[in-house]
Image (cartoon, helix red, strand yellow):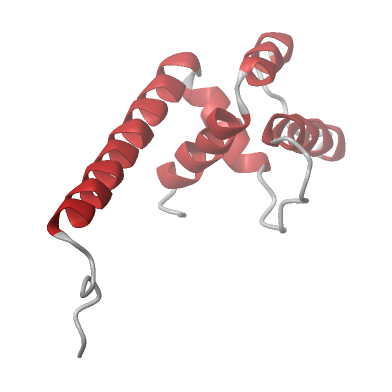
Length: 114
């Protein structure tokens, strides 16, 4: 089997490794930030309401999360959620698209879904 790094210089490989390590650290920081911003019950609600359909292109994750929560709570009349939706939605709206994606990822990881 050919070496996948054949043709790259040592400096190029070190540069790629440095960028990959930085990306991993950035992901860990983002997850930690999301966990500090949201209550466990809010993360649970995101997980519970996240539909497993394909995410539409061009729509920010913030809007998709809020729409999923609204749809879920309107459809499930017998479901009572004791949290403050206005506060949660304000937090979600302040997230960047990457942070909103990370919120979904954190919520799904909690259940072992990735």
